[in-house]
Length: 291
Image (cartoon, rainbow, N blue to C red; front, side):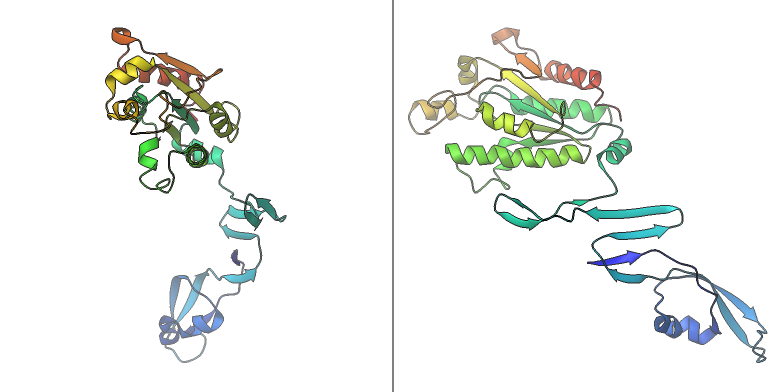
């Protein structure tokens, strides 16, 4: 790794105007940035011609180190790496590099706290609708959000995964890892996907600090979801054309200790805006809408 070592004091350098303006002497000296020249007439060389004196130089010294720092005025920027190599899954000899700008710095910049809002429930329970309403509500308050929708992620990140049990688990794991990165960036990440098994949701919860994983359960009866059937998937599942469909021939495990439960029963269902306001109020009360 090539590191940039900070600027240091050097004596002033003088030369003839054509030579300095052409940059030839600067190249020989190794300077890459010249911020200002001072034109001096009748210099001490006796020639009476014009010369220039370099007032400000920012030399760069290259060093091969694993720790890099650059000093600019009073600001110091550093990046440090943990020296010990580790193995994670199939990745060997990997090291974690810690940045001098951390989550708290990013949250201060955004004036909010990063977290993951994990919306789970049966197909047709209104997860995506709530995610969009919630994102719109928070955006109108000047808060930065991003939605990780289950179907959307299967268009790219998870397009190589099927709906078999092991692939569904991997689908959730990947989205959980991406959601963690968004939260670390200070963004309020809204993950919207069926995620039918508790162990998979709990694994995603374990990736984040205590309190930063907010599980929202769309508690909507199967018959209500099936009556909506906006994608026509229940009809296909009942006809045996889709195997392993959650709620039909594959189980859904409701959360046992989630942060928010949104119940919808027939005509008593709240509007998406009302449901979004419930989640927004929770975030506000927990301090996530201010740094």
